[in-house]
Image (cartoon, rainbow, N blue to C red):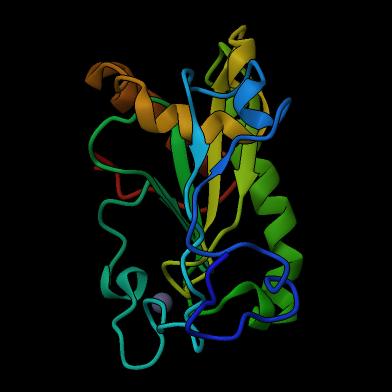
Length: 205
Ligand SMILES: [Zn+2]
């Protein structure tokens, strides 16, 4: 065990720093949902960085979401929310839901927090409405940008290996969807969302 340059906090003090370790027997690398196989080891844990560097939108760094400005290129928008996707096809239909104003989850005004659940439900239902989708998974990470962004991932029906927490990892390693299907899917989501309010710029990819 090496001594980290910074003193870890109490939830990180029990870890071993600086040396790789073997994957635990029966751990997630051995589960059917894990996308990789072969001999695996766990990376050496790097020293803590305290204080952490600012995220996008903090400490004088530009917020990428706020810098996008107008609603061009969004799949769907309304007075308080914007829904986006990458312009290039991805392996999974993947969307990002953000508040129009610069808030994170901890300082989201109560009125927007009350709207969030119903909006997330609409996004989920629109993705399920594409057909051939078994489940929509959602996540909120926020280590890169401080502007709240909820991820939505559509799991293709029948692909049982894609269940659960590894879905996003699969999305990173699989070939992208055909462009035509990608564009049709985003157009369908835009249409389904606007059917219950809000609008679309009409040019989402
Ligand atoms: Zn922002």
